Image 1 (tube, rainbow, N blue to C red):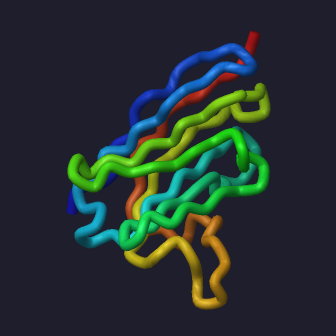
Image 2 (image 1 turned 180 degrees about the vertical axis):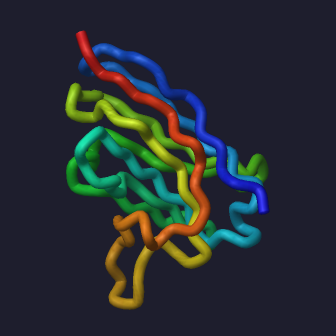
Image 3 (image 1 turned 90 degrees about the vertical axis):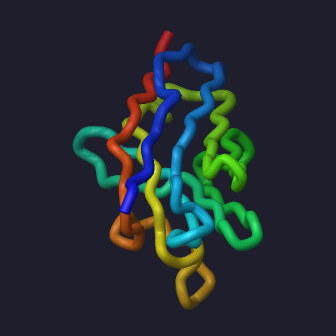
Length: 130
């Protein structure tokens, strides 16, 4: 089974923007959702955003709401994370992960824990500094 592949990371100044891309060939096929996670040294990997393949419903962690936008192009089997108004605290390795269920669990909560996702990309570094 093909794994997701991230790209688009880089270095940007505070207030700047980056768009991350995730090539997920099985999006809408085997995977019901694609999530973005991030991790910095010494911290747990945390959920950033997620999109359901079925209807395009999107979910965001509180710390990125209003700044990040997740989107998908089903024809291209691509998922994007548009990051705007980036802050130094956004510096992390960002991962694209595929889930064989929708973005929410049985209680309707957005799944932000990495154990809930099945296949992972290699990660792409995002650095926000002046």
